[in-house]
Amino acid sequence: MREKRKKNKGFTLVELIVVLVILAVLAAVLVPVLLGYIEKARNKKDLARARQMLEAVQSELIDLYAKNGDVPTETPVIPEARRKSSDGNAAGSKNNGDQDITTSSFKKRVLSLLGMSEDEEPFLFLIGIGSNANNPGSSFNSLMQGVNMTKHDKYTVFYAIYKETKDSKMLFYFNGQWTEDSPRNYSHNGSNSINDTINAVNVFTKGELKGKRMQYYLICYNGTKYSNNTIQEGGFWNDLWSDKLK
Image (cartoon, rainbow, N blue to C red; front, side):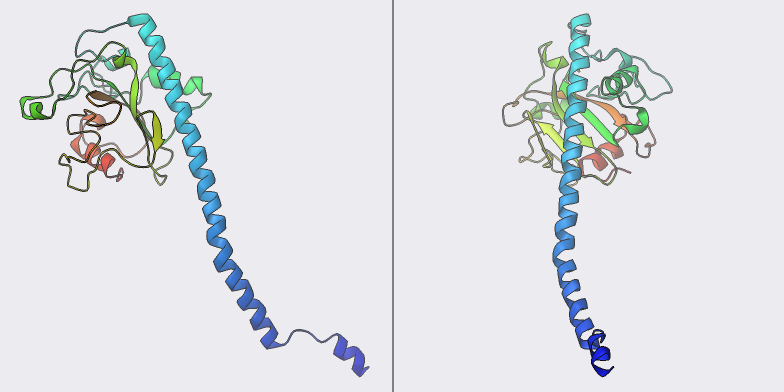
């Protein structure tokens, strides 16, 4: 009987503590690794979706070019942005001609190409195409390096910002590549920096796109609307560049 009791003897308190310590050490090592794998998988998925969105938008722009060709100066290239209405599609924003087309049929066609519903669209998707706007104002003349875009430029996406969810990493497309590094640095309170790839009047200052000026089209945005039409509100731009969108 004594021998049988010895064989059925459980772990001692010391042995249990040792096991718990080993498990804690393993958790401390493995959990960050596992979380890192999950984060990488999410980033890859976001990047894949960003590429698909960009390809769909460029496809729609090519279709518009085939139908419309060149457009009168200062007229938005995307027809749905040429009217003023209560749905946020401004006819023309101050200086740069940027457009909020988050409720447009253009956006719906892009989502349709991807088999995506509006409930599945990303938190943010904004593109920059060759500018069709005139001089942005005398105070910016010294920053101008390129204004006269070709009609092909006006239908070409040179720049894009993508954010899958409010808490996702922001992705930037420029110089033909996607990156997590912003070409604009707003740590200096919004003022133009000589180190920026894109200056205060949306002209590329370096790289393959140097001299090309853009105007922006906000295609998807599911954050809090700003007091004015989102694309025209200064607070929206400051929050965008500093990745603090509401």
